[in-house]
Length: 97
Image (cartoon, rainbow, N blue to C red; front, side):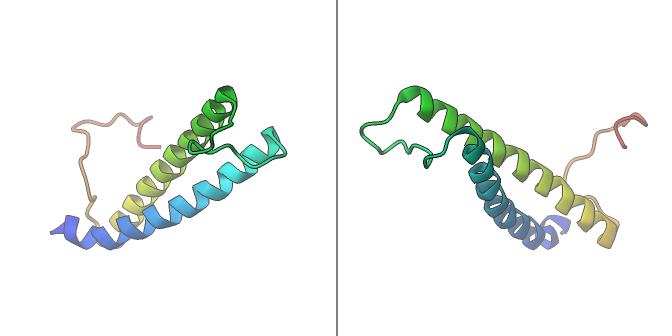
């Protein structure tokens, strides 16, 4: 039941994370290069630049989505008292901080 109740939190945080990660990528890429990031469908693109752009974009997306997912789960747990997902069987005190 908690999975169903958590679904709107998950969808909302995922959409927000996608928007934030795009903006974060644009800021990071702007520090790397003055021009727009290369796209895979462009014919004349330097492979090295494309790899760098895709790696940065993927890292930013994964980082922001992971943080948003965990944050939405914590918020849901604070509101409902139920953690939506798996829990480790034994957490050490340093892991709970």
